[in-house]
Image (spheres, helix red, strand yellow):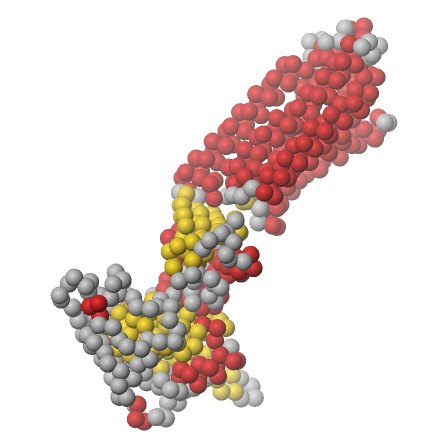
Length: 552
């Protein structure tokens, strides 16, 4: 190999490594820290067993396609919340969500994990608080007036407990599109509003008070929440109403589900926060025929995962593709959560939290500092030892480790910016382990040089010949390391993947730098007497070669 080409190889490698480092710094790209280094939320969800909301489904009973749909919906919800660099995936039968850097972890946990199965049901009556069977007292709460209005004109006012659904109709001209109030002059017999009655202790279906199923006395409910048959879509149900005028409500059969909604977003207006929703073309017809027209001036509840979020009065017989939900104590947070769930739809299967862990930012920062300190300390010890043992060749090790570190930083920062790669504590561990693998390559080469010198060859001839046999050993060792890292990455779950990825990347770089950097640099040093014969620090001293051999 000509000396000029070797110089070019060394300089090109250094330019690439340090250029990558300087480039990402100039672009203000930094490695994206993982959950354990940055703090945040880690939640494992498991699919619900059929008809059991808090029991995991048996392994293999849920298809991979369904789990993939769950991941897609969760990703949409997390992105809608503005959480950066989420890590969401399937591990065995479960779905793992890792959200680094989140602040309101518990709120996010509740929002993203909701099944968000939305049903529209007519409110039949307001139920009192749940009373256990052993109790003889049933408390009754007098309901406050709750109304749902069409988009109000400037003269319309409502109380703080009012919940309204507004129909937004659009009228077009040749030059502009404006929003106008829907006229609600039809069905005069239903004009005005009377709140639904409090549910009786017993209920007997009749022609004047029909019900698809017999009504069980409230005092005989055996569930501690007082919820009755929440998943039944074809009959009456009794559900909790946390923000309503009654503790619970009895609702009729499902009129429509959340699939009629195509988009939703929160909006802050003078009267308070509201949720604006858009209907699909098919959903508009369904909403008008099954909800708006037959329930004009009646309450229709939004049943979200077995809990009534709002129960607005329908104030229009026709909705022209959009509407609004307002009042009823809706604030910025609840408006944002509700619109997010409506916008991205329901999970295809029910899930519940299997494990939930919150890592504080201070703990993550401590882990990061400890990992960096351990890495730098180990690197310094290795560099000091190689310089002491191999003298001038030890400098080659130092330059190789520093340049490889610069290139690694550039790769990790670039992948974090472009592909969302996160660096966690296990990844740092993989990088620290890779230092040993890289140094092993140098040791294999240098020890081979020692064997060549002991066999009577000069340093000048040994540096080239010794690399050929040493490189085969380096390739074999790195191949074993890379295969191990690849198997770990493909078969492992969780943090082990980060370890395997960093180890695999470092191993590939070791193969490349050994050929394009270490080999030409050592050959150049071996051909220069200034480095081979330097007193106490030369290559000859590091290889244990006599001065006569060095001069040869």
